[in-house]
Amino acid sequence: MNRRHFLMSSVAAGTAALRSSSLASPNDTVRVACVGVRGQGRAHIHHYAPMDNVEIAAICDIDESVLNARLADVEKLGKKRPAGYTDLRKLLEDKSIDAISIATPNHNHTLQVVWACQAGKDVYVEKPCSHDMFEARQIVAAAQKYDRLVQHGTNCRSGIAREAVQKLREGVIGDVYMARGLCFKWRDTIGRKPVEPVPAGVHYDLWLGPAPEHAFTRNRFHYNWHWFWDYGNGDLGNQGIHQVDVARWGLGVKYPAKISAIGGHFMFDDDQETPNTLTATYEFDDNGKKKFMEFEVRHWITNHEAGINETGEKKEINTVGAIFYGSKGYMAVTDEDHATYYTFLGREQQPGPSGHDPGNNWANFIDALRTRKHSDLNAPIEEGAISTTLVHLANISYRLGRTLHFDADSYSCIGDEEANAMFRRKYREPFVVPEKV
Image 1 (cartoon, rainbow, N blue to C red):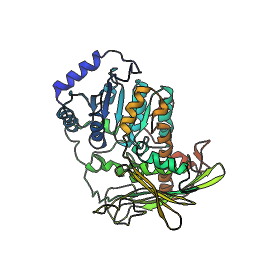
Image 2: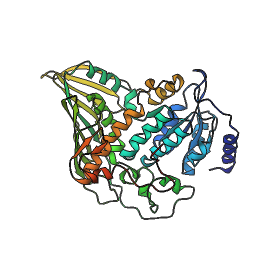
Image 3: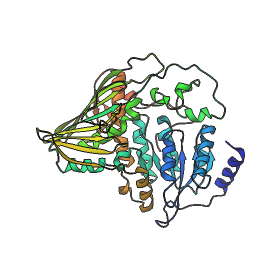
């Protein structure tokens, strides 16, 4: 990054006055730092920038070219140029910053949230909040130990899904016994990319963080990291976590008792490790009543289901949403971009209640920071962590090729030490998510 701005940022951090963990009044300016800003992090910037009494005080990215571009973007929006950092640990030394908004790769999420909570910052963290089962517990433990407000980036919880779930609770489609999540997104081959020198300005050691040492390739870096087990969780943990969360929420359940997933990497001969086609099934025991959830990932030419993303003059190639089945009908809830739900009632499938509202998960986060009430968070980390475990359990089932029997009380797969061993990865020092946060 520009050395003059780096030096100015360092001075600002070193001289910042101590700041209370609670804002003095609703009119106080909330100082937010955005971390990881190439893709989804750019959306974070554009959500916070227009908010009243919110300042993007700092931006952090390990790629200096991306960092400088985003610093300039904020200035183009007519805002004060933020401080710039490549190392989050340095940013966290600035006591004037109230909250951290994280959109880094999955394998860094939990450790960065733990660091932020330890530094007294509230956190917005993108989905999925953890890279494995162990981290899903640790991220919640850190938020609770340090009494921080941590919002999960499952944006549907601030949109129309809130009304949809309320309608389900009111019995609009009767007794809901099943949910189906859909992640049909057009994903072309990533091809093969050779090992090459780390690009100038990229702090690759910081990008790797907890992940194993690996030579740099373009396919393991920007965005395509999603398709490697060291960093991502496949499309189930990329797009699918949104719909997993809505489906579980609508069913009114927490942890599954039985999980089975099957699929594969079809059509392409490329570097991708994660499946591009996957079917996962979950069985829940809801106080003695069995409930069932399906989830399907598809990567290529496919049909739509329940009319999801099929409206308008031009049909979309993606079908992303959740469908609920009850004794009186069914309900379809689209993804956060379309943010619509609609119901079909009776054997004749007559149109029932419907609604549209994209909501704003970032605005809800800021509102909760002002009230300091955990109950005001629409997507609290406790809920996000449970939904994230469904992603991990399905991926473990897929990788082992067998059904898992999960016990929520012991947080383990019954009689399956091989599965339990996959709950926690090996960390690369010094980037270690601690046993005791």
